[in-house]
Amino acid sequence: MKSFNDIKEALKASTKRKIAVACAQDADVLCAVENARKLGIADAILVGNADEIKDIAGKKGIDISNYSIKDVKNKNEAAKEAVRLVSSGQANTLMKGIIDTADFLRAVLNKEVGLRTGRTITHVSVFEEPHSNRLMLLTDVAMVVDPDLKAKVDIILNAAEVARKIGIEQPKVAALAAVEVVNPNMQATLDAAALSKMSDRGQLKDIVVDGPLALDNAVSVEAAKHKGIVSPVAGNADILLVPDIEAGNIMYKTLTYFAGYMLSGIIMGAKAPIILTSRSDSDETKLNSIALATLVSSK
Image 1 (cartoon, rainbow, N blue to C red):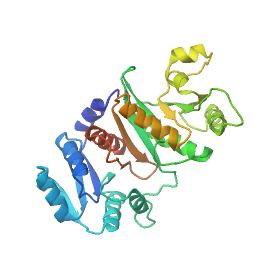
Image 2: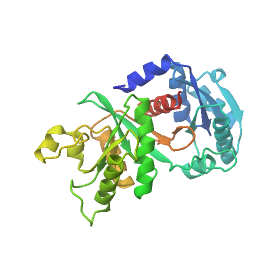
Image 3: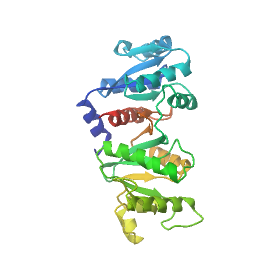
Image 4: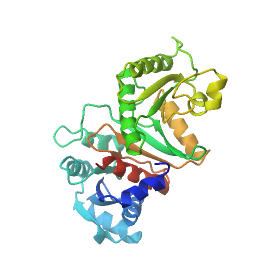
């Protein structure tokens, strides 16, 4: 798949999936799920304060009869109920509404009804790269603050799962750093070298990792040639693995605000993909994130 339109078109031809929205009494979230419903991407179960949900829907011109509503006024209990709907198979994906992220994730990790898998929960962003007419992945920009080598393995595995859903069977991962050589004083380069060796030895099945690579060498064949870098990943990376959340968050927002790229973002590593958007995300980004999570949840 080369664009978000490709993802949306594929979903229209598939069995419609269902989103459980935790604390759905939020105008932005309701508009996002309504747009997804109208496009035939997914239906939603709205969990939260029913009176507030109906009031907001009325003000936004949303026909609430198109939705199933579960009236749970306590936000923490609403989050837990939305998680239960996913863990029990009544919904395929989970979406955060108007609830603090920490409280939302606490419900996700609940021992009784939660969505734990034992893998690190990470953020995976997909963006349209207009110059090469394809979709690329960026991770982790929002969840793991300062990942160690073990966490980076999980970050790669989670991103690879998303990559395969958009048709990249053997994703190429660029482990990013500021330089292309291993420097004992730069932990990102040491981790990148270790991940590359793990890839060489087949420890990351059907995933090709190379690094350390600076960003230019990861995405530009010409830049890689100038540096004399010979690698199947250099210049052709599908997944950009950032060294920490600061680098990732800055890059994500640079793509958004300076380059105007179309992006999406979901949480992986749980039993089902999770849609956790920011209030500052555009309506388009929210819709793209719903579409991506729905695609990943499909069989």
